[in-house]
Image (cartoon, rainbow, N blue to C red; front, top):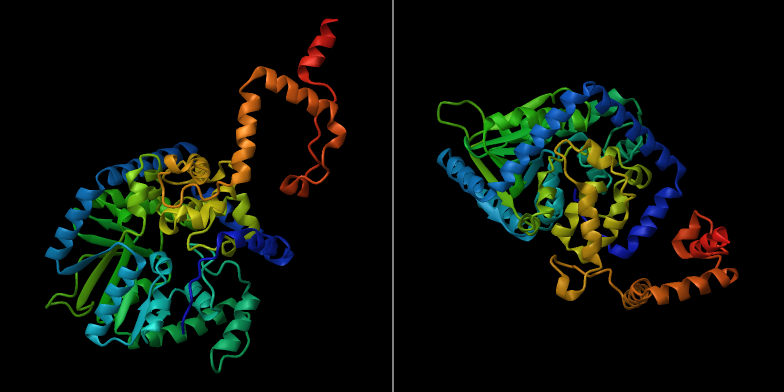
Length: 475
């Protein structure tokens, strides 16, 4: 089974968005799901003072970790290596996939069972393994559903949130041999569990993500609700963990507040069902666990964000998905419309570093800048400020460019329009003359004004300028 990860061209974003907006059933599903998640989160933070205090602590921990990132990464590698974990560094998705492929070929592995990992989605891991003749099988139920459907996740926490149980029932009946149609949720879970259990026993390699990596102790922390992550990291002979370089923290003491923020913000739980702390492969006196543990630390544009003082805040993210759950845009168009691994507000600010601003700049404009994402972000990422910065970068002149793909939205017509605007509004006489012509020629205003008039009345200048009204009052 293979899942092809496709990055859509930027000019398809509007078409994909309109497709969802014109689908009442899908919009209803997303609205209901987002309302449910918002309610769950709200129930976990009844005390506003406690919530804000915890958010400030979480933000301080992430800011501190990023401020000391180079030192913490070196410390993490040293301590993991001392405990028998093999640490690999990858600058690009291709390098990360090649590292994993080399491990699989050296050990003769033909199948890999995967726990939930958005970084593996980011690098197109399943597709890369399939091309090499190795099966990569998703064990998270949501990920398994979208893999079976040949789709990408539409949410970073709940990958199959866009599907109804009836759609899942039809998918299972169609794709899994010998499975009858049932839309009973417990029945569907049992079917998935039966299929997945055999994969854990057969796979030579288990792959997982990493929620946090603790530098001081050389510990990999994974949180989950289904137990599949624990199976992936203990049953197969080899465990490969993959994560972005930003996920490191300094001390074990930094984990509790971050874990509390993560689970309460993501799914409205006081704590996740499983918290796994991994510090090395199986020792000689131990009865279970993998013989080898590998950690792949991925850059893939993160150092670009890190190098910029304002954009560095993007890397504070703990991947809870709360910004998506409260975003009015995401709630209407869903995750697939974005065309990137990470959708929603966090996707709009991190994707330009992973894929280039030239491939992703429309996402920065797909926001009302209402600030709902900023209000709920557990680590206080100033998402709206970063979105405005990315919009400016998309329009930047070549000499002002500071990001890969800067200036991608800049056009000859747009540049000319703003140059004229600057001339008019920069000179009092020109402004007075232009405003006089606009008010007198208001009857010539076009009724079709592009995107503005799709949902609004046309803009028509007032019959009298403000200065004219003031003059009339003085008479």
